[in-house]
Amino acid sequence: MTQITTVTTAPIEGQKPGTSGLRKQTMVFQQPHYLENFVQSIFTAIGGVEGKTLVLGGDGRYFNDRASQVVMRMAAAQGAARVIVGQGALLSTPAASNLIRKRQTDGGIILSASHNPGGPNGDFGIKFNTPNGGPAPEDVTGRIFEATRTIESYKILEAQDVDLSTLGTHALGGMDVEVVHPVSDYQALMEELFDFDALRALFASGFTMRFDAMHAITGPYARAILEGALGAAPGTVVNGTPSPDFGGGHPDPNPTWAKGLMDLMMGPEAPDFGAASDGDGDRNMIVGRGAYVTPSDSIAVLAANFAHVPAYASGLAGVARSMPTSRASDRVAEALGIACYETPTGWKFFGNLLDAGKATLCGEESAGTGSNHVREKDGLWAVLYWLSILAATRKSVAEVMADHWARFGRNYYSRHDYEAVDSARANALMDGLRAQLATLPGQSFSGLTVAEADEFAYDDPVDGSRSEGQGIRVGFDGGSRVVFRLSGTGTQGATLRVYLEAYAPGPDGLDAAPEEALAEVISAADAIAGITRHTGRDGPDVTT
Ligand code: G16
Image 1 (cartoon, rainbow, N blue to C red):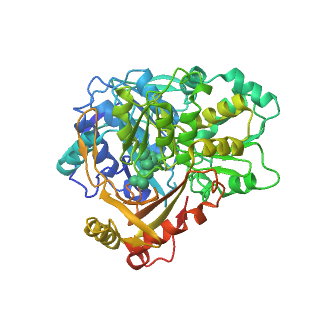
Image 2 (image 1 turned 30 degrees about the vertical axis):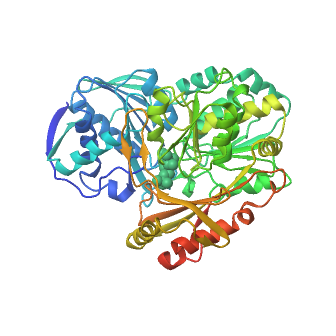
Image 3 (image 1 turned 45 degrees about the vertical axis):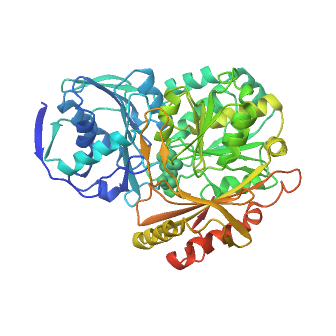
């Protein structure tokens, strides 16, 4: 028996989507009506779901199983025709984006708080992706937020749980639930983009690798593709079984949280290549033997080496990066004679550029790299792209980087995060910066003279929309730069991000330790913003 119930509810404070959907502590999501209100608001914002087909999946974190059943019962109660869901309610974010596009659906719902820890005391999240496969742009998230502020009721089907462990189509009220294998369509897409024979030959030649799936969603994908299809040695993929609390870890692929992989890669037993991905599989970390690659450098290297990947070998339309990402890719774009775009932080801002064919590759300092193959960043895609470069050149990661810097110069880069800062203090710091913008140019701090200072605003060249307040940038004579922003993905207080960049044109000075090359910029950043004074912290919590 199934029965549709209309549940009376009221608006709940704080359901404003951030950089990438709504992310909150799991216990917040478990409050009565919290999830349902937000799901209903998504449905309202897209004009209802009657007759529509949606993709559904998540990173397998705690509460994923319950939330997926709720989403399906609400969709069924409101007349949706079909939900395509990954087996076990699992789908990596790029795999979900691919399915939304491939099956020409009306969008999808992704259950994930990305790289944030999971579990009853961790975080949960939910976001809506539009029919192009990308994260909802600001006009849609604005409508969702408006709906959360006026909601009075939601409809839900009273029914038994759908069996998501069995592939095939099940009925839920009048709606079809199609349970698909989470990996198959994604793997087929990767086989179209990359030369799998060349990658198989690389592994057959004795090339060694470690991929750390961080107990998160990419384990099954990496095992199937790297060990299964490409012949990497068994055991190449570690921490490969998704667990609801990510093995108690923090599934963020950076030198701090993927320390085990970093230690291995910097030590005497290092394999040729190391990589990691995050909770939902859209972020990546690339590291060679003794050589960590910053995400900002990674997108630049991928762009410069487009000729080694069949899907891009005919040329790139353009490269896009988020504003705080280093300008290493700008130099490549200039050399290639292609367009280069600077967008606000948030993958959603790349969607229009990709849809309009203006950009082919996109990258962010926050460990995100991707292309026009889907509308999300894609961790394993980046790994396969790097493997393609290594297979074609037969060089080590360190050699590829040295060649790149010799050709383009080096953009030293680091990000300092101050987490869980009192929101009022963080806002005071940003307000203090804003107040100085007009007077900063010409002043010197720690030996650096300010050339320009502004607050970044973005005019989308495709739809003409304007996004303001996207971070404060201070540029120094000689090309160094510091950017200040408050994160839109944290769940406790405010996270201050300080993005630091210094350019060395070469041929000398390309081998410094990043924190040394950036010492003046770091010191100038504190002098300008008063980081220690405002936050009360001696140093950053996380450096990437
Ligand atoms: C999300 C967005 C990215 C953004 C990152 C960090 O990534 O999709 O575009 O760069 O958050 O954002 P913030 O600096 O506001 O915290 P993910 O991997 O968390 O979905």
